[in-house]
Length: 248
Ligand code: SF4
Image 1: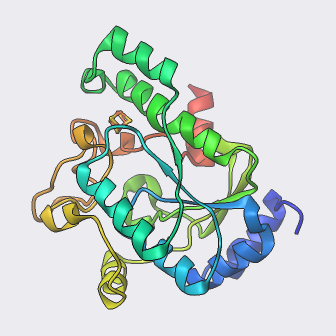
Image 2: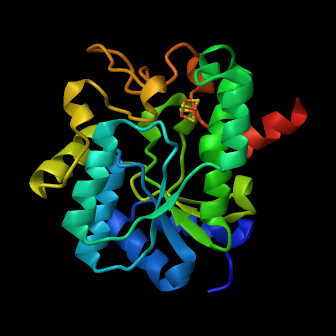
C-alpha cells in the first residue's frame, strides 16, 4: 500500500472505528511490515499490545525510550517481558552530549523549576530519541486511550502523525476503558509494572510521576505541579496542538 494521505486516512478512520485491536495490528503488519514499529513504555496498555502482538505471531519491531530516569519497577517489567515474549527491544537513549550539557548547566532537577525546563528535559530524554526511533519508519503503534487525559479526547484509532513527517499512527486501544485493559491483563496473565498496584495508573520517569489518591484523575500523578492541558511530554502532539503552537 502507498503511504496514506489525509483523504485516505479519513476512509481508514471510518473503516477501523469499530475494529478490534487485533484487526488493526494485523492490518498494520500486512500493510507496513518492517516499516511499522510499536512504542513500548511498559505501561498497562503497552503490555497488552505486546501480548496481542505475540499471540498474533507478528514480528513488528518494538522500541523503548530509555530516558535514564525510569523506575526500577519499569526496568523489571522490561526484563520480564523480554523473557515472556522472547523479544529484543530496540532501546533508544538520550543523546549523550545534549544530556551532559543540560545537567552541567542546569543540574539534575531543572524540570521542577519551570514548564520550559520541563519541556527541555522531555525534549532531550524523549522527543529527540523518539525521532530517531521513527526515522525511516512509515507507521507506528501506540497504546494511547481516549480516557487517559483531556489532551486525548477524540483520539482516532488511525491518523497521520503531523509531528513526525506525516507517518501513519495507529492507536488500536483508543476506545478501550481502563477496566478492559485490566481484564485483559488478568485473563492473559500478562507481566505488568508493579507500580500499578501501588497507586500509579500512569507511569513515566521516576522524578515526574507519583501515586494518586482514590478519585483523582489517572494522569494526576504525572507532572503533578502542572496544569492538565500541559500534561504531555511532546511524544504525542496532534495536528490541533501543532496548529496552536504555530499560531503562538
Ligand atoms: S518526564 Fe521528567 S525526567 Fe522524564 S524526560 Fe520529562 S522532565 Fe525529564
